[in-house]
Length: 149
Ligand SMILES: [Zn+2]
Image (cartoon, rainbow, N blue to C red; front, side):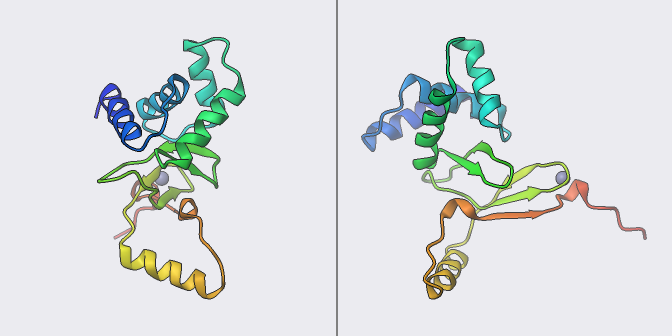
């Protein structure tokens, strides 16, 4: 999806949900969508300053906070980067497969059974899971050493 269409879609969704996609929030989301790769808050700030030289870090952090809260983007805890959520039907957080070598990130769909099981197990410990914290580290297909035949 091209970024302009994507922002339009988010805007429509915000209208339905009575949320406010301010110009700053839309600009930050557009930067992350265009990159299509995880960015740090500093990367986003530097990019935004190219469009609006007077932008200060709190503007970016406030926009990121809103976007995370409503699941338009995800914060990757282990690398402290931000990534646009791939949506199917609704905006929801996806578990992440993170390659420890090339740092690529793949979003996956968690089956509702597995999600229930995780919630159930955590619940037994009296623990409430943050949906954002499903991060799995490993090696992606291209970083795994080739098996010698
Ligand atoms: Zn890799």
